[in-house]
Length: 301
Ligand code: BEZ
Ligand code: FE
Image (cartoon, rainbow, N blue to C red; front, side, top):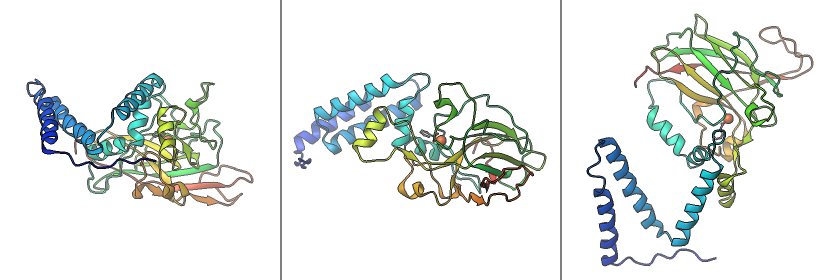
């Protein structure tokens, strides 16, 4: 196998390449929107730096164009391969980091993913989000507070997750609504619901992004998780998930880099027949329980 050898770049060639960068950067000088100008000029500098850094061949440039074309072709209103690409490159998580700055003890945000659906059913406190999805029942409870520790009543909590086979409801063709719901915190800022113990599953990998992961020897599998989106008046919206302590995929690596230490929670498995928090009878099934106390930053930080 041939590898790239670093031929020294002579000063005349360097000057030519520098001049092209400067010319392209200057082509944005008159952009009426200063933010657009800043973004395009920075993009130009970084893109040219990348091309020069790897001494991109024309064949590689062609491959990149073909790859991006394939990403476009598979994208429609149900499948967003560009977002998936951003996810596996860590660009989604970096954008989230930049836009959800650490603030006192506010809960960390993580990647949104493609499987959120508006208008998921409302459940009462202690209700069940499964809607027929298969998996080990899991009692999830916690509080929503602000960064001063004050409970947040009426916070809207959206939760969604895959079934034990690793599929979200929207990945089935039968229009089922399962493994998702929303609920509201009570006057003490508390919430609780029955969900399913999360399992690891692969991101959609039958397209160009999956092919790219395979080419570089990366797994498409995500660490097991349960998605949350929490909104409340005057507070910064939070999109996050919780991960399962002990899930081997956390060490193997999450394909979209979504894991944060603070979001790894104990999902304590309970023996068959052990009493449930709300008296629900689960016969001889095991079940699990997890606690997730959510802290929302003030809006605008
Ligand atoms: C998800 O967790 O649902 C997800 C996130 C990023 C890409 C694909 C799926
Ligand atoms: Fe997910």
